[in-house]
Image 1 (cartoon, helix red, strand yellow):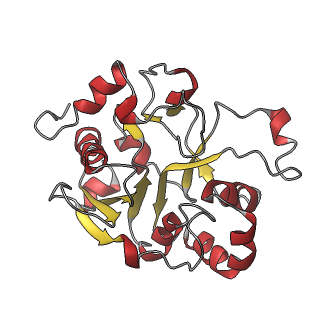
Image 2: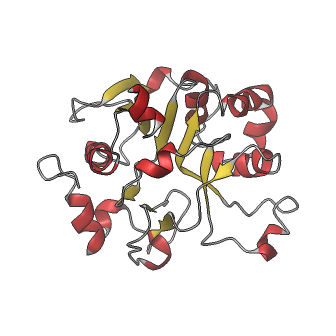
Length: 251
């Protein structure tokens, strides 16, 4: 029996939705996938500037008052995620990007004990040769923040560090992932999910049945061959559409 079950604790899931890139359908279907593939008590919160048509079981936080950093949004892009480390520093917490497809049970991996925040490592692009240049050239990044778990205040020092060095960080880094890779990975502040749990759809469009989650991760891609969830066909559409509220059934 997990601590969540034993003590009746609630795991907190968080997503962000602002602007018009993703519709409420992305929020609702992701919520429904958690209903299917997470077996213990949870709360689901969306930080958004538009809550229309979002499932009423989802808690809402106003995005317009959430970001504590007074810098352009194209610098340390998605830095709002680190605010979660500061504002939600009790219990077991998970943030999720909207462009992910969960298709296997995630209960066990969420509830494994860890001492640091857990991020995705881009095993699909990582090589030792590329790692030789990680600090000298600044072009590589193997940290992915699409699915992150932390417990209590494990990530609070990462937020505090960005506050302390904000002038330099916002000048240097365009994305949160690169900031984390170059400033916190090298200081051993991060841990990572096991290889094989996550994979990237836009590399080869292949279904990995044994993995927990497929990420789409298109924000940095300019190639027309990169698909969002609503653009993909075949197995993606079949699984994703099954997460409509009236279709979801627990295993």
